[in-house]
Image (tube, rainbow over all chains, first blue to last red; front, side):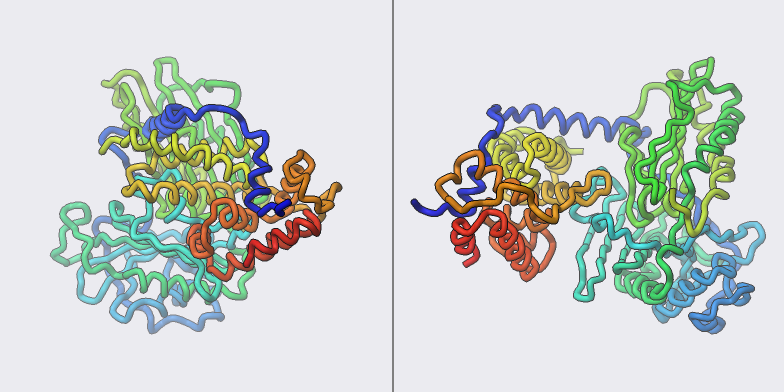
Length: 419
Length: 175
């Protein structure tokens, strides 16, 4: 008897294969259903991106200039935050990141600093720095954010190119995308979000992951002749290109060597959000001007997907006596460097700090908006009514973000505690 | 937005679905899990069908999507598939004559279950799908050297479980 080949053996394991005709229509139906879910909540006019408050203002206040000459030694840290800008302050991790960033900037690119009480810079909780950059004499500024986090070696690498998931076909899908591990074992991904005028690079070793994201759309500096952002501004001559972004990522990755990765965690405890939920509901009731009645049994519903890393969703749905429907979601993703989609509402929080809203317009009036909470968290609200003439959805969603943020932002901890 | 060319998608599903299901079964060791994996793969393929500009790329696109979904499913904490340190009873006696009976099938499935997910994927791609080392490396986004080493380790694991007689045939596979 001829010895079986491995293929023969594989063939014989297929005994028991279900005898069922292939019905392609079923796969078409599943594909259509998924597509329809993705479009369910699309706001009028198509996909909308809700920019999260960051360093970008349409008109910039006074420019202080380049501070590279004042940067102290990398390891020293300054407990008083003396020579560091407000977004760095006295945080030794941020000081280390800052030193690496400014040292890696291209020679003709410098940091723009705010010095205007009307636009106070508040340091973000966690190992993240947002700055504005300008190329010499360009008259334009570009926002850049750099964040650090522990590498989640228990998860597969984020693969924005080959596995965009639900972001496929959206503005948040990475284009001109590259991903893979280099000869030094550093996993890298890079891409452009062309429609969002942004680019991203990701670099991570076994301990630490760095994400650098920057805008390619110029904002006019005071006194420049450039049109304001969104009024004909062109993504020309950006402060960084991909190589420069990667150099900054590498510099920060190197600067993070020796840091305890556990100290780089950031986020909220889901229990804290649950505890704050009555306050959040109160914010909504004040904005709506009516009492909210929960729909369903849970107020809120809590779905903890990973207690150790405090990943999960918290949500509630309400109605008012006059037919207004209000839905509030908070979710925290496994890591800052990867978007997370909540399939029930087809919301994807983006690595660029925005949210992707997918779906066709709803009947009647509705409004949706969201805001980032720390590096991994997001909150999202939808207000809708069957009355197209009711203007409350837009009014409520437009005005409620800041008070929601004021409740949630203080809950962000760094380092974050596990469950 | 252009409509999806459903006719070509249906044709692809009709021709390729059974093959995908078999590969998925060899990866997962369970027909229900295999069906889930194929459904997920074909749903993603439907959504991305416009991007599959050349129809000859579709099998590779589907294969890559399925592999990524499979590898991801084995690495997520809540769906983690653990590699067993020692494969339980009924080690192979090496009689190739029973290769077609239920015992042999059970042994092989247990052997595959004892192979780490990526090694199992390499074995299935190389010896079931008949892909080259280079093609597997491209699909799994790793080096050809990595594919070769994963192949050798995976085969060694199978040899441990299947027994000496079938060892010879498996050894022949790597030449």
